[in-house]
Image 1 (tube, rainbow, N blue to C red):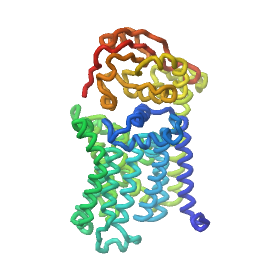
Image 2: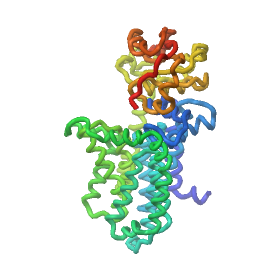
Image 3: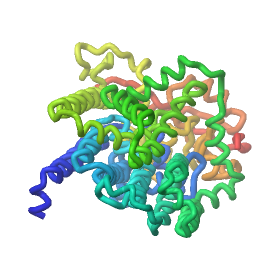
Image 4: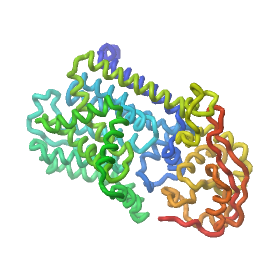
Length: 516
């Protein structure tokens, strides 16, 4: 152990991994759960082979902390993401060290540790991207060992001999798909590289490829089983999101490019694009071509898609993640002073901005009114979308005051699937009452119960502040009687920023319609 610690790169790696875990853990402990995160918590209450929105692994990674501790909080639901991202960083280090050098590997880990969309989107929030990036990076590492077994670049032109690692790769690609359908892009990139590399084309004809395909299909079985049972609804829903919903707009394309650079942070995003495109239009060695196949197709596909429909920020990020190895390799050749200033400057800027954002989300430092506002605040709660990120512990305390009403109802429902997740997290320790959603966008709720399940039962409606006649208008045709029970104020910085309304909805007369 002493010998390992005496090596400078090992100390740097340990500092990056432990320091990053501490920073991400702090954010995870204080940041209220995002809309998707709270919704994915409900996955853990309805374990199944797969789900309407995503495959299985996000349920397992989200449930890790609550299952181990028995505590449901924003921190515990993120344990899986915290650990998986630490593992992904270690794997990206091993991959870069094998393909290039340990120096390049440290720089690559440093880049991945300061790019906000990476360490927040993949390493803090409990999203499908956390297990996706772990298995994606594991696939990168195994593929690097398989296709470039020699440690020295000068020896890599030797004849390639396919091995059992191809079978392992098939399994890892399947597991990446079991986290998010984007995992298919990993398989596409690997096949594309083999097709275009004369030295590696024999991998596609190897008997090990048959084992690889077999293990890949085996890993996909949960997705197939669930979709067969539900008329392939998940695959139809996800594929439909790629269909254009308007004409192509160059302005929207530009906005997508700039947004992606912003999520990465400009000092990371611009060099990533520059390095990737410069490598593409040069004569790259096989190791760089390998990384281009695992980065540029995804980067370009989803960026270009932004010209005809909105895309989520994480859709293209696995491609940028693979490209960090190219940027790390390039930056390792810069002058040491330039590289240090670049990484430290980026890290300090990102950390400062995230700290300010976290303080606002949790304490309302820009909010007016707020007891903790800086210079009196300037942002009205009605104009601040962050007020919809509810403090689960505060909400739980408010629900405790209406525990008798909760126990007298047969179920709780909302008109918004994401609010249902937040409410579900808050009431989980108080009562095992089931929760559902009555709206035109049901997602998973359409498969966790039948529409007839609630007929003849009494529900408790919980929703954001709305005129009572609106609630009556939406649900009066379905319930025998609707009575308002009270209001639940949500405070931040000592001021009320949201109000939840609670209604008792007596005896559901007929099933609430479902779109699927």
